[in-house]
Image 1 (cartoon, helix red, strand yellow):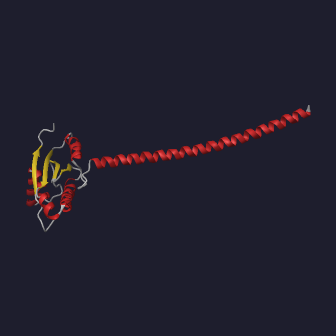
Image 2 (cartoon, rainbow, N blue to C red; image 1 turned 45 degrees about the horizontal axis):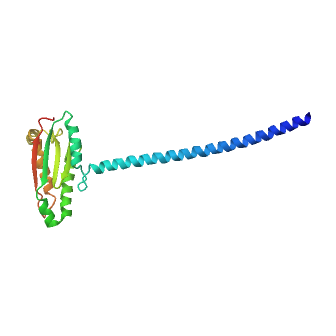
Image 3 (cartoon, rainbow, N blue to C red; image 1 turned 120 degrees about the vertical axis):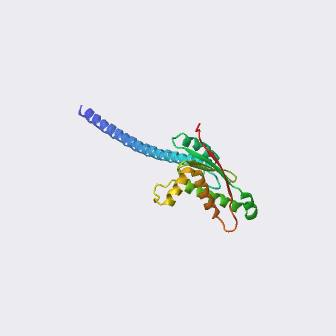
Length: 206
């Protein structure tokens, strides 16, 4: 009888030892699988971030003019309706570098591109986020100008400042045209950059 009990106890000991080994292996495998899952999760997150970045870059590329690095025609057509849907009023301006063909012919297309980029940088500085502007094609630009453009709330109360402010209020489009023309004109001492404008005063946003 005692021999059977000893044999049973010994058998249970080996069974427990065997099961413990199996449990350790299972824990090790689970630990490995958890690490692998974490690595896969990290890889998926990185891929999602890369895809998101690629989509953002494609979006920027789709709406950015390759030469001037400002919005293109598609950009203008997309964001103008959003601006007009608000409560502010706007004026639509179109202008072109009228002698760009002559500049390209005499000084090369690279110089012509520099002129266009110079004009685009000025528009960006003048308008910022208050309106919408774009290089729509060739030598042509379009600007959705806020109707309060040029109003200066920090001006001094001299007669000259009051007169200038009244002029801006009366016709912000003319103010913009004069400022842009003066700033574009300083591009070169060798040749003149000529700018021609068209104005459309938006009375019905629909």
